Length: 158
Image 1 (cartoon, rainbow, N blue to C red):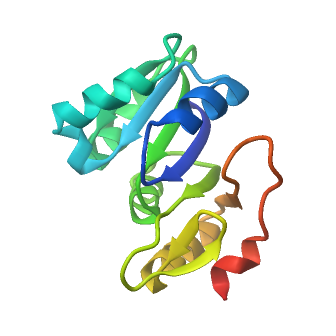
Image 2 (tube, helix red, strand yellow):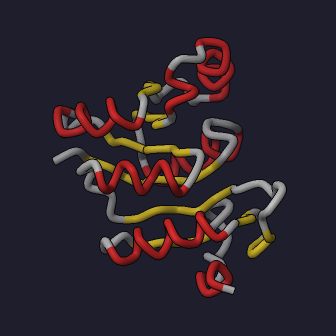
């Protein structure tokens, strides 16, 4: 069983908050970005590698490859999975990745989305994914940074 410390939804993927705050607080030593587009984008990977803490390794896998390979992870790997969207997380869970908790950190405002929390904007498809994740037994929390209180999850459903 892979040692998944936390899964976070953050459309910025690896950046300052993830690198300087979350990674240290949860004790991760491997940042795994599960995202189909980034898996093939060397430029974006290079930028994220610059933001990643020196004590943590980085991996950039497609959703499918993550599902196929995660069970082979060493117990010494303390994995922090970072996804861009709730759709990606749902695909991971449905693909057999044993995700127990999802931190909803940053989902930017865009056309067709509504702001529901400090840094979270959703559309109906996002909400449907969150409901499905809950049905599958995944705990959800809205929290931008580790030293702030989690926001009211009911905001998602309004």
